[in-house]
Image 1 (tube, rainbow, N blue to C red):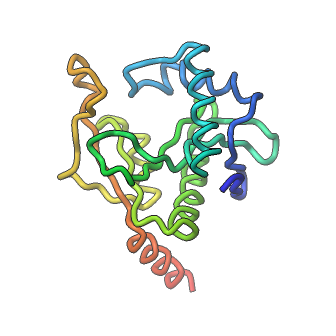
Image 2: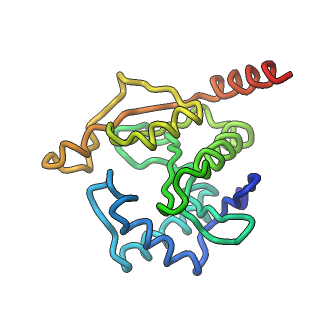
Image 3: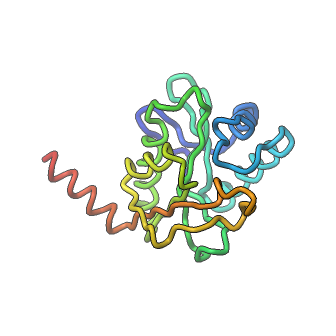
Length: 193
């Protein structure tokens, strides 16, 4: 898979030079507002190594996002085989995280569209899911822009979030099937044709 390219981005595996940025986004209180933890440098480095190895082994995962114009790494996005026991083992999740200075520029939506294209067109995935803390309006807005559909009957309390954090426990569930994605693309093409 690596690298994928969009108009402004390169979606690629992690490199040694990405460690400072990866630590930044995993320790920033704004970026991690909806997560019950922050990672120190050691934990951040270990997680980056884990993600890099997963991408090499599986061909997918949470990958670095690099600006084409400058070569700067700005965060990550990717298709990831979700490990939560509440989902079937073949479940593929789309997710993202950006440094705050890159918010509001459409990078996640741009990367997400290319990742969904790759997942549905090249990998023939049957569906992609996404979930977020119920109050995370930014991520939910991205899900809508990407065409993911809410499945309120599948909203859930995240099993890895302590009950002492009810503000972070409830998650909304979204999904997009390959059939929906194809229909959306066909509808967009017909409207623009």
